[in-house]
Length: 305
Image (cartoon, rainbow, N blue to C red):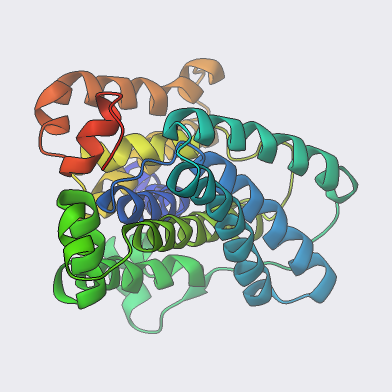
């Protein structure tokens, strides 16, 4: 039972950064823009959060700095694809490599530096509940924050005027123009907000999950987040469950090793990515066909309206 509990608890903790990235990508794609640079925004968030946390001693300021760093990179993506008409795929990948270079350059002096990041905080009473308490209520503050962010994003997208504008930009962008709204402004705002969330995910990695900075520490989680959005059919609630599933795949290796199981580490590291490929293969075109209408044009390499 302890192995299962450890994997479940590790899934929540390890899946949180993926969840933030996937929630941000959900907002962006709902507006009709795919951002393969989510990995880059998470990297920028990881380094930005780490630097500010080290220099100020405040993990909350670090999380904010990480969010702003992720938003800044996504704003650049929005400028390139929304205002300049660049390929969404090419722009996202290019900005990812830009983030890799910048974080490697400016992060070199912070490798090995101690940081006083977020520590585990047990919720009184709730943390004492068998199994559930260990899995959900013995976590760090950014995990608890994510419990509120998921329903908030759902409410924002489906119950507010701002969410209606975002979804209209992804479904019937011409309707926004008819009613006097700027499609470009709505899409740019959604992409930037998505980067903000991805930056929090990156900061969670460096100042809550690992409490360390090292080069390319995101290690593909941003790409998993992008795939997860398709897997979750652009639903914030399903994103949460999917993120924990991938988090459990990440946590399985360390849980087995802690119990002395002799399992090939490279095989364990490949599990999340094999799972991603398997999910995409199973879903196939059926899920893509249910994507926002403007996003289908991107998948079909046609220019959005």
